[in-house]
Image (tube, rainbow, N blue to C red):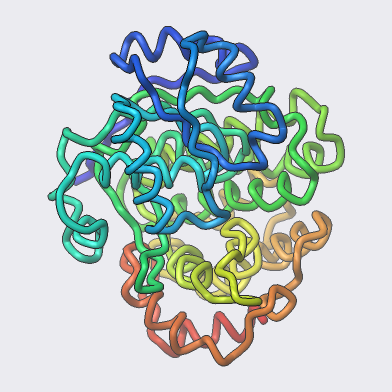
Length: 382
């Protein structure tokens, strides 16, 4: 049985940010905490949101790291309580939105954050007491603004998912105007994240035709527009289509993801140069070709002609090598060609594989992967 739940308010277009005051009023947020990062502040995007809000002295937490951490979730939650806030506005990429979802739990629920992680059985413990959240994405990739999940690196080093419909933002203001100044490398990396979401959810074996349709249309938009948006950041049509593709990938991935994400989640927690800062979208781009080769002969993929359907919307010839097409796209975008180029080597494989096998995306891949399958995919991705 398919469970289909598309239930949030989405404003998509170049006037979306202007809806922020009305959405705060609709939701009942009078004293928000803005969750963001220093780069978004420096780009002037937080000030644009403050100018629209016209609420006077609005507290801002701008210490979101490139990969959200439990320590920063707790710091922001403390600020939320100190300031007497009654809601959250996340202005930024997936990291800021995911951090805000962590705050929505930590600021309103007892106990440790770990207790609410999905693989710890915590989803059912997240209640409607979670702080209401408005998401304002400034990148086109994660789609976290319309998703019920968040990924956070815990103090014990694990990078885990938190999932509940109570974490779904009450409103998503998807304004592509906020992405016009996004640097080309970040445009490329986040765009490949959107492509990975659309592909993985389309390949997931669950029966959910609306999710398939949304994902396939999102893939068509992203594939046709990502290079344009990367090459010319002021291309308004390309930016609009990438914002839509990002949103669509996340609207659809309630159906499930797969091995790309079960690998990229633990890879994102691998220390490189003393920091856990590997970009999620870039990791997805690098491991996606190996996963596509692994999944090509999966029973549900073959039965539903899924690779042929993806080739059609990607405007590729019949029988084209999808894995090679994705590898070539990554190269054209100037992203790393492999994990080794990102500072990852075989020494971390055992830890990554253990994380992949325990990840919430592992069981929704169209073909079950063993430890050796994951090792082979990692080796191919080096």
